[in-house]
Length: 157
Image (cartoon, rainbow, N blue to C red; front, side, top):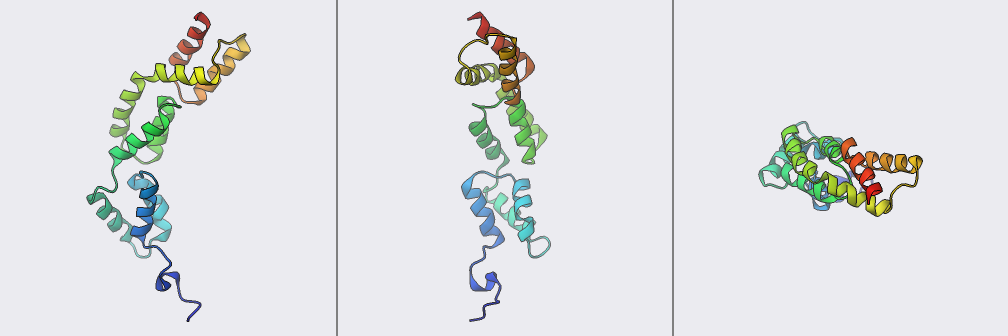
């Protein structure tokens, strides 16, 4: 047996389509994400685009499912701006992301209250603790007005 034979000839290497399907089996990926991940494995120019076109035509790649998946995984713990940043980082269209943000912003106050309740559970004792709670919510991607309402309401309870 020839030890120097490339892995493709010995049957151990995954095809570009096989790699794409492996990524898609783990979670939803946008076309842009797959392009970034698979580009180093492209053997001939245009091969990657052809594989991704084929997968998209068969509905293996769907931007709407990527948006839905990210929102389902992240919305309970993060604010709209953080989720928006992640969606844009996946190379999704601005209009699709904007539509998803409309739904998230409608529930942002309730989600922020729940995140605050799980982390802190009780009103801040002093200004330093209040600032800490506000920084925590800001780091999670919640908006300033929502943060103010959550932290100030906790003091009114």
